[in-house]
Length: 165
Image 1 (cartoon, rainbow, N blue to C red):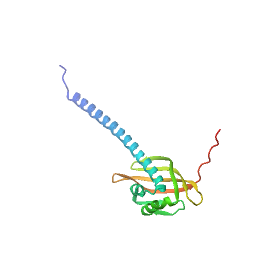
Image 2: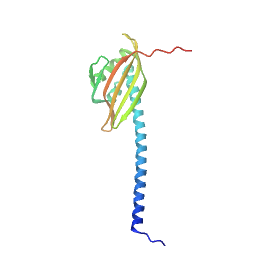
Image 3: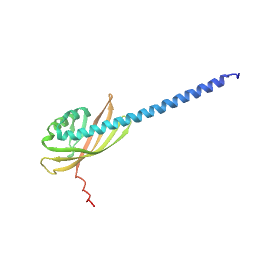
Image 4: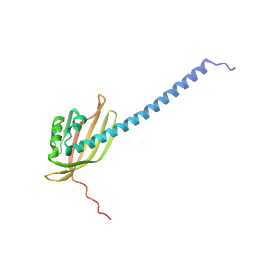
């Protein structure tokens, strides 16, 4: 039988440690990818719900997704806090007939995510009657919850419809 040397045992142990570390690293990376995909779905769905809350008055969405220290900038350049957005959401159906999310892109930077998108709305009165909110929301992971800490909105016209051929 071949003699097992101390160097041979050390080499096998070193290989085993490297193999285990590699497997753990791959497993952690896959778990992170899955986790990021889940968070992105949550952010997209939350953005959709917030857009719809403008027409349905469901302030619970706003209460859930805006951090207590949230600060937003409205299309006129005015700052507003969470409490003002909650109150506005409850009253918004008096002004808006509909509001729907068109698109949102989410990018991650560690425990921060930047969501940029737009939504189309129709108002009951006022000018314009139809337009879009184009916005950027900054999400952070704090105390195990993803919430928006900053938002900036602007109003833009609806894109021109392409003529049918």
